[in-house]
Length: 222
Image: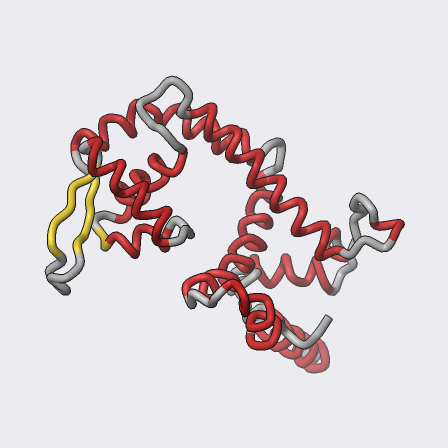
């Protein structure tokens, strides 16, 4: 038996576990295989892509930030098309309804945080949904000072009327990516979401946000 090979495999597995603490890869043989392909076998993950301005010294971080902004705007344009001619005033309204339909009744603040919005904006959306009769509110069982909201039959009706177009919009956003590329993109975006969400929920004042994140959350490595 080749004990040297077994030792190498164990060491490689240990390296995978250390490298995968962020959860970028699934903690199984498929994730391990993908990690090996990306980092050990000279796979596609090692090939550095080009981006606009790279030859002039533009950083990868700048390109990532710009591309994420662009993708957000593209997605919003498709979402606006999905609700065109409907009873919805804004795309955020159906996002709120989708969350309530998927996860059930929740506090107003939990619903707002789930949609990654500030309280004033979120409350305006909730009030519009209440006025339309698409959601209902009642005192929280856990805290009588707060209220929970839930989707109503009318809300489910108006949501269902647009679901085909909403599903169409979500398919368009992912473009011509293959299933494997979609899975990899989900892993990367999940990792970014796990990094940024606790920062957002901490409610750090804008004046100190960049400095606090740079000091307390950013890794020291390049």
